Figure 1 (tube, one colour):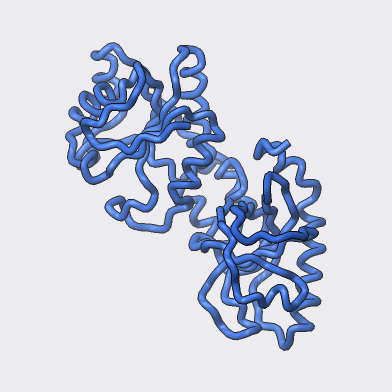
Figure 2: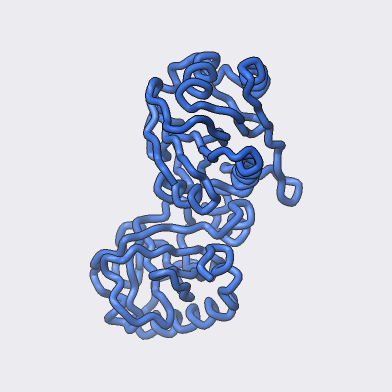
Length: 311
């Protein structure tokens, strides 16, 4: 997948694209369906598929915790068959009128042949542009516009707000249904303080999971393309003195050196609240219980392996 850092006037290479439009925070199940619609149109038309979006970390966007960072979004786009991701500079693009965005950015710089967006997509300065304007202007220019209808689960709209509420409540299994895959983090392993190793359960520290409730989760970890059962604690490790909130993962039945490797942790279910134990022996016994529960409740990880295209 190619990447294009976009400011108005920086045209993409190529002769024409089917473009999926959106911020795509979390690239949740509805986003996936929208991209799948765009992918189908692109394949049938013999055109490459592009995604137009913004960096998750751009502070000029509305404030709030993001489900995923830019790198995670890019990895998901690639897995969905996207050929080009256009990462737009929010500051310059947001100053364009809705009409100029369509004329100069979509049709001019990005060579849009077909645009696909959600029914509630807004664009242009002050978010003045809507689906009706997009449809009219693209049609007049000889391009096409396809609206993706609203998608629901259990009669509730699939939304970033809903997913954040579930993650903040520790309901990762339910959040995974709305995301279309388990919530995950990406970490390049560095040296920690080694407490887990001293207890007989070596762990690695993640880069942080600000969306998640504190507690112990059953997880799965990919290391060099192979899946392992795991348990992950999100919290302060109060048994050994309060630390800053962090995530710490014990990979079950793994032997080897993880330092320097990039690993992915998939959150599959909530096991229990974090607590302070009276001593390390009590903690060790609890970790053994957590380990056995994780293996049992995770079950055969083949379903996840297939979903991640690791087979």
